[in-house]
Length: 256
Length: 197
Image (cartoon, rainbow over all chains, first blue to last red; front, top):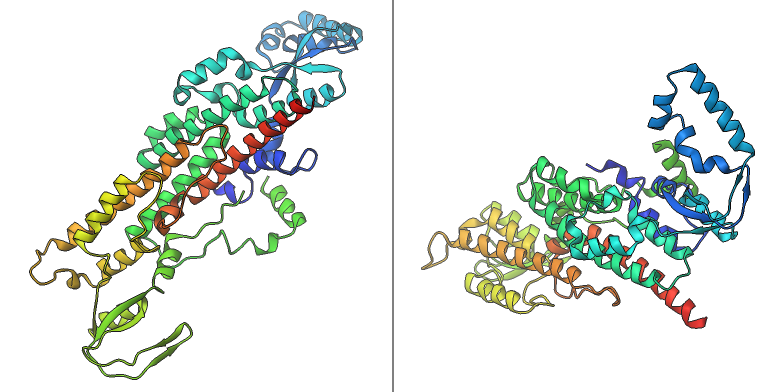
């Protein structure tokens, strides 16, 4: 269970991001990278030459369902290529709403090219849902990296409601940690029981769930006298040669 | 984040270093160990030794172990009721390794528990009351994280807590507290900025 924890950690991703300041975070943390891949709505402040295709991404993207349906005939393929070519030269008008990956949105927002808009999970409406009872909300549906993204967006959105957002998410985290993470990892022994819970949890909460569950299992094994009486504690032994930053990063790469 | 944690086995190992009184039934001079000098041993004269030595001697029928004062049914019942009364703290009457010591004694010298004039189910009663105390304490820890307010610094009072409870919640709770702290930091940073403007 959760064998990945020793090498790569979701929690680490969130903590290191804000802990050591901007630009100083762990470059290799895969969860941090994946969190920034989540799309966030932005609004263009200026005309952008040759970027009009951004507004038609779902038609062009070969992976999207629209594309597959339309690509049945060669003719439409040609038409599509033509359309794509046209879009390449067109101008994306200012005030257009475009979904960009978070890392790109933040980078452009810093240069005043776009403005970050609050994503759906940072709107009043969603807060109301959360306040009504966060432990039943499937936060994973919005984004598996919801906490990470909220903290990231908050750092760059200089708005008065940043505080409200953080207060909401702090309370949500506390409530969900107590009710979902701890209660279920303490009380559920059957896999089917907590597979339902796991669907609701974000990646961060899943990791907490796994760590807590692992402790519980270790304790029970000890109480029932299963396994050896003394074993190597991997928390302390086996990580010795990873003291240097380089070595740790190298290990992460190999894990991937 | 810092997941480093002791295993329950390691905790048991540390608990074996706690001192306990035994009544030996043999005559021997002092034992000299790295951790200290114990003895001399005289028959029927109580002497304090580490728990591991007591268990070793007990398994050879060389001594009888005197149970610690707190490992007593009525005493544990009072502790349990105190535990239930006080919400934010833990009862200071139990040693840090109370669960491990109790488990070791239950497993290795169960005959000591059927004392004079006591029912034979004494051991079972003790086991269940220890288990109850452990559950009550764990529940308290959980409550303390639920009562964290968004604006306050998350604090938990852990004085006189036991090793079992602490060990079980340590990795998940310390991570959760760090996450809370991180988000609060961000909030404060933001508040500072708006004040300057």
